[in-house]
Image 1 (cartoon, helix red, strand yellow):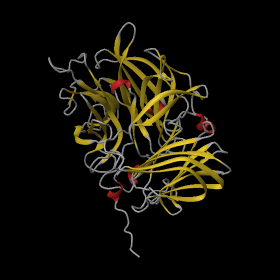
Image 2: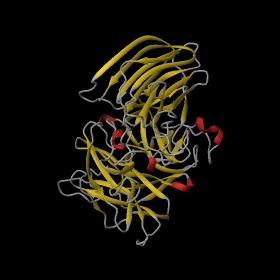
Image 3: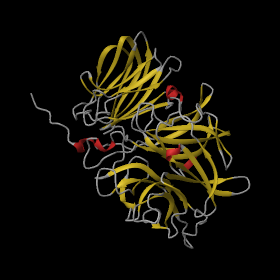
Image 4: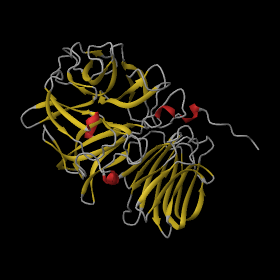
Amino acid sequence: MTAVSAPTREAFRPAMHYASKDTWLNDPNGLIFHDGTYHLYYQNNPFGNVWGNMSWGHATSTDLLDWTEQPVAIACDEVEDIFSGSIVHDAGNTSGFGTEYTSPLVAVYTSAYKGSSQHAGIQAQSLAFSTDGGYTWTKHDGNPVLNRNSPEFRDPKVFRYNSPDEAYWVMVAVEAQDHTVVLYRSHDLKTWDYLSSFGPANATGGVWECPDLFPLPLDGNEDQLKWVLTVNLNPGGPNSGSSGQYFVGHFDGVTFTSETTVTDGMQDPLRLSEYQWLDWGRDYYAAVSFNDAPDGRRLMIAWMNNWQYGSAIPTSPWRSPMSLVREVSLVTVNGQPRLSQVAVWEKEGSPTSTVAYEELDVDGILPLDGGAAVQLIDVKFVPGSAEEFGLIVRGNGAKGTRIGIRPGDGLIHVDRTASGNTAFHESFASMDTAPLQSEDGTYSLRIFVDHCSVEVFAQDGQVTLTELIFPAPDSVSVSAYATGGSATVPSLELTSLA
């Protein structure tokens, strides 16, 4: 019998997701599509693989799948750490940072001022600009441009708003401890006037961070345009720890009004499952969208980790990946507007191989051919008498990551208690659930499996769960299972992606 070696920390490096070469990363920042290139900036420690020395790292892509790491874009210094923010293309050079021939990219970021600064202990909003397409940056001499003298005022997302009468910049930021989104407007990105506030509402079990505000047509109807406000919070997610929520409503250029608020003020702990969550898993946080994405697409990406155990995950020298990019749309579900999310996956040269099944009867554990460490799984289930059914991925016998549906409870879950290395932190092993109902008696799942993660998109992305996992390298099997009775699998495709 050949001994199987323990996994190295580098063995968990994702094949489908972005991770830096040898440093720490967290929140995505400054997301923009410009001159044919997607730019992903992010919170980065250039000097280590734990949080600290916050600067903006940088990666670029032309397809949202293959990313090239670039040099650090905006670095911390003795006066400030560079916290989260956004980037706009100032096409009209309203800021004056451009040249005769080049309109600038302008980064609006949070300055977290250190003890040596005259603003010590304050978080305020500052600017940097680039005239070479986002590769080199110069900090504005007049920073900060918006200061509320608050220690918790951060994470500005800026966009261009066109009203019937005028166009101006809108900033959406947070007073984190107050669970409040604050909105400002500007004509030149340098001088800002207060517009309105939103919150507290729905989930308030942790600080509010990384807001975003954008329009989407309901059910593809441009005549039914609604606005979506996303707010991340930590802790307080539906399955503990970091998470993100959203509200749907209206924005008139001054005030956002929600039509999906469940609880005004502080949350009702018994109603957590009624709130609208961007993702029900443990590892989808600080999600924000790209500015200027082509064809009007609304594309989002998140940090794939959780502050409960983020610095302890067993990877080295890098630590923390990003999620897959998702295209989000607004659809009507049971009479209510809800987000639907689809992973962007259009990689040339993939797949490497596909194994397909039809009309499987499952009672107990049914091993399948076609398992792989990196793969895309498309599966449909029809419940029979089973109390629970689903798949075991990145498995080794009966152990692995269990993605299960309990139709009687109206729930889907991801069980990672036997998914490999779970002992590195006491809060990691978990059974995470989300509400899920059948559609015409059928459950449809699309599952992306990578070296250290699973991303589950259920019922065409109406429910998603994102989870880190750390299985042994030889745990690559896939099994269908049913307990307490039988279930049917009308179709199943296992596509190897690496």
